Structures are given as C-alpha cells and as structure tokens.
Image 1 (tube, rainbow, N blue to C red):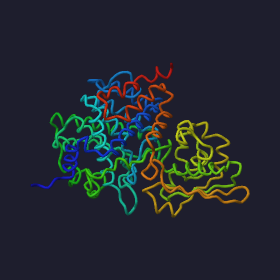
Image 2 (image 1 turned 180 degrees about the vertical axis):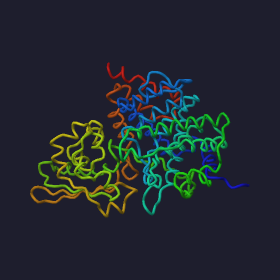
Image 3 (image 1 turned 60 degrees about the horizontal axis):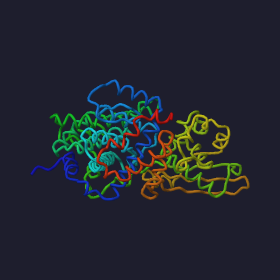
Length: 475
C-alpha cells in the first residue's frame, strides 16, 4: 500500500473523526469559541472597513442561503463566510494559538457556520467541523514554526500565517460539514492551497487590508469545498511536494511531525488562548501587572516610575519607539502600546478588565493617561525571553514616591491553559462586545445556544438575532 501523503493523513483524520469521538474539553471549547467569535463580529459591524466589506459582498449576487452578522439579507455561503471572517478579525480581539501566533477561530468559525447553513447540517456536525478545522489550522501553523529561532517562518517571509493556515483549516471544516469523502477533502485542501494568501506588510506601513485576511480565508474555504464537490481536483502532495505549500510559503520542508504526531488523539483546540482584552496579545500581561498593582492599593499618585520588562522579541511591537508608545494618537495605536496597557491595568477597565471602550481615541490622548505613560519604560527581560513564545510574559517594577520598589511578575498569559477563561468569563466578554446591539434576553439566549451547540437542529437560529443589528440597536 502506498504511504499516505500529509493531506491524505489529514483527510483520513477528518473523515473518520465523529462527533462522539471528540473529547468533552474540545466540544466545550468549540462552543466558547463560537460565542467569542460572534461577539467580536457584532462589535466590529460599525467599522468603516466592515461596511465596505459588507457592501462589496452584497454586490456579488448568487444563491443566498447563509447569514452574515449585521446583514438583514441572506448571502451566498462564500460571501457570508467572507463578511463574518472580516468582522471576526477586525478588532484584534480574536483567539491566538501559541507558539505559532496565529488566530484560528476568525476564519474557521465563519467558514463552518456558512457551510452548515449551506448544507442544512445540525449543531453536532458544526461542532465536529469546527473542531477538526481548528486542529488542522493549528497543526499546519506549527509546521511552519521554528523552535530554534522561536519564530514563525511564515512571518519571517512577510506572510500572515493566520490567513494562509486559516484557509487550509477552514477548507477542511467546510468539506467535513458538507459530507465530503476522504478523496474530496484532499482535493479541497489542494484547491485551497492555491487560494491561501496573506501579506503582512500592512502591519508595518499601514493599510486596512489585514482585516480582510480571515474573510478571504473563509471565502477560499467555501469556494474550495464547492469546487471539489463539483469535480475539481488537487494534488495529494499539496503540502510536502516539491512545488507544494511548504516550499512555496516556507521555502523549506515543513515540520511534518507537528501535523502527524498525536493527530486524532491529542487535541490542540482547548489550548488555544482566548483574548480577554481587545489589544495586541503582547500587552496582556502588562494589563494584568498594572491591575496587580491596583489590587495592592497602589494608585497613580503614588508612582514615581515604572519599568515594564518583556521578551526582547516583543519590544519592537509594544515598546518602540518609546516616545510614540507613550503618546498614542488613536485607540488603535493604544492597542499596541506597552505603556498604555500598564495604565489600563492601573486604572481598571470594563469587561474582563479591559474592554473596547477603554481603547478610544479620546482616552489614548487623555492628559492623565499620558502623564502616567510618560513614567513607563519598556525594556527586554531575560526571564521573559526564556518563556516566550509559549507565553507572553511581563515583569513590572514600580518605584513609588516614598522610595519603595514593588515588582509584579506575570509569567503566564490569561486565557491560556495555565489561566483558562471559564464559559462565564467568555460570556462576560461576549456581553461586553455585543451588549450595545442586543437585548439582555437575546444575549442570554445566544450564550445558552453556544453552551449547548451540539443540540442545535437549525444553525440559522444561532445567527438570526445578529442579522438586523442596526434596527435592534436603535430601539
């Protein structure tokens, strides 16, 4: 018998894994990730980029059988997946896998929801598809992670692993939900690999295109699954082949063991980090450290200076240039500021400790906050370097006006396996995000449906309250 290729191994895992085979922790995690993703998508509907993506999607036409958050008309499944993927990734609030540093749910969940509506499948098939899609996305992402440099090779080549790996995982999810055979799943991956892309230059010099990346990944997934269903085929060696995915994106053989080891028996899904705070993940430990000072009873007026120690690799994102990081001009800039994160923790924020309302342009330019940020230095810390990128730690040293020195170490990232969020905490985040748009009854009902996602018989009931947000909000 010919040895299976990597895509064939993945397809066999996907086709043979049943809902009842999923560990309870995986099923519970999927429900929480759907709730989290939908809440973020709702909160993002007011962005100019969201309106642009939605307007373009409405222009495309086609057989409209799927729902998009914030739209009171149905869309073709691929377009619904696109819109929801754009929304889910637009606020930098979506979950993160470490150490690959990719955001899997923002593409996999929208793709799976659209596929479930397209094929009329139930909650169990939705959970199954999402679980498998997330697992594939993460494992392909890890195949491009270099443990020696502690970095994603995708990113070193200017590529957005979230979009590229997300397209592949989402495609498997869509194929599974559509009832594809093993051969069709292989074809779907082979097709999706020719669609997967995402250039990360916008992170460096500007542009809003990054917000589109998970939308394109989800759109590619539905398109690839549909094309395979109609007979388009793909190469079985799509991942490891001489001109395959790894050679194209990594310029080297991928780490096949990251895909194969424990596939089907060891699940990465429950360990994907939820984001409790709507800011760059590198800043989260700084928020916690600032909150720890506040919990000690230390107020801003007692602080002489602050030193935030972080992994050296994080410094360029949240600490340089320091004058800019101390004086963010917008709420978006504040999301990438170590000094601002410390201030949010010190002053206390909404939601789970920091919410979207804590990152406004007005607060970023607040004189009081800038006075505090001026006291913050961001420096490399060797203890943090030893832990990164499996965690995003921080060590905050506060020198008080009376000469006392207080140190707060936050060496694990909240929302990950060492400090997991409960369903109740994810619900709190969901309420913070979606509360301005939905009634208390709707919020509670939607959270309940996600908590029992496998019991749903009609996926449309999950999305129905989210399709006319403008009129709901104006009531």
